[in-house]
Length: 275
Image 1 (cartoon, one colour):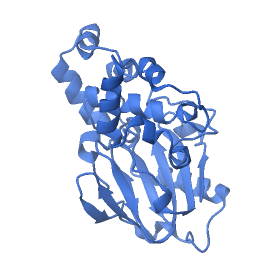
Image 2 (tube, rainbow, N blue to C red; image 1 turned 30 degrees about the horizontal axis):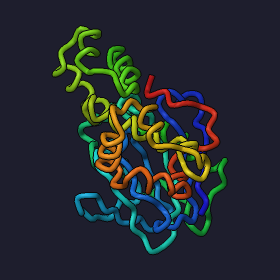
Image 3 (tube, rainbow, N blue to C red; image 1 turned 90 degrees about the vertical axis):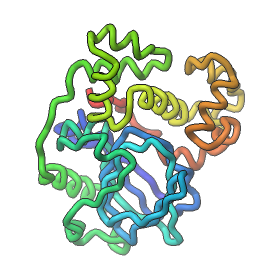
Image 4 (cartoon, rainbow, N blue to C red; image 1 turned 120 degrees about the vertical axis):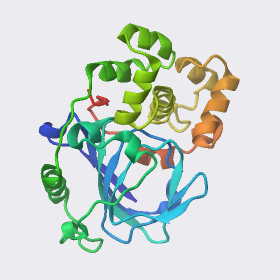
């Protein structure tokens, strides 16, 4: 299994988090994919796989498609190995670059037109990293562009809500807007409500840190992890974690090899959250 990441060029670095490459990936070795506000644009070099959602929906992905903000877990089903390249966006990146509304994309995998665009790329002729980067940059430059500015108050809210204990009512008061106004604009840009974003960010922040896995940190105590992420008690932490991930923390953090495929271990750049 070969999964790697490429840094995007500077002209896209405020909206594009990374280019993602899968070569010969066995779907059975992948975990359920967690809810996320990071949209993707995916190009399958072989036969597109099936997707199963946590509510038992089953469908085949298009050859080229978007992955909208997801408020549910989903997993990839495929008997053959997967090879694909993808563009992963920061939160709100599809909105700021292409005016794609998050609420329209929520829990969707819409097809991107022009299947012939992959040209010479295929499983049997897997491109070099240089070719992949050139292709994805060219695609972004040619994709229909209608950029939209993310309002300053939403950028501020995105940052504030990375702190688990931030009360949304206090945040609205600080911004001078109503809860309804913040919810509406947040759903439009991010694809989920502020409370959902805060909860999902807390979980992703937790599971993407290699030091939270038993393999890397055998002395880890989940009481310390719960405290670090501002849970009021261990019971609340366990309940919240299982509700979103489908697993209790003790089981999840034993699965380092699976989860390590879903964050950039070697990344030296940080999540700008569209700001």
